Structures are given as structure tokens and as C-alpha cells.
Length: 75
Image (cartoon, rainbow, N blue to C red):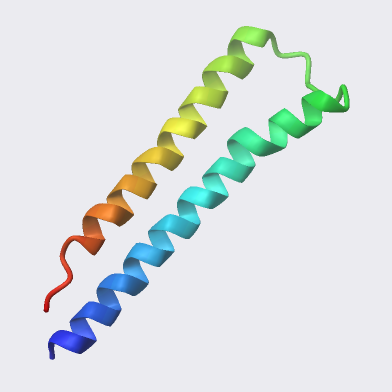
């Protein structure tokens, strides 16, 4: 039964890590790319900086949660 539990744990960790990558792309990479092409919305630089760090922090938290889940693997 330990092998099945390990595979489920790895599947959950992978899903969390993919979600963190999605958050990074949506909240960090896309606005950065749009600013390179001058497509930044007129919402103010403070809002963009705060949103950048909020999305980055959320992605980091999900990634660290995935690492913690992997710590539950059994031998």
C-alpha cells in the first residue's frame, strides 16, 4: 500500500507545482512581457508592483507546499 500512497503523494505535489507555475505565468511573466511591448494598462505603477509581488508570493507558497507534500513520501 505504501507504493500507491507514494504515487498519490507525488501526483499531488506535481499538481501543486503546476499550479504554482500557472500563477507565475499569469501574474508575473505575462505582465512583464506586456510591459516590454508597451501594453501595460494605465492602473499605476504601485498597483503593478504590488500585484507582481502578490502573484509571486502565491506561486512561491504553492511551490513550497508541494515540497512539503513530497516530504511525506514513505520508504
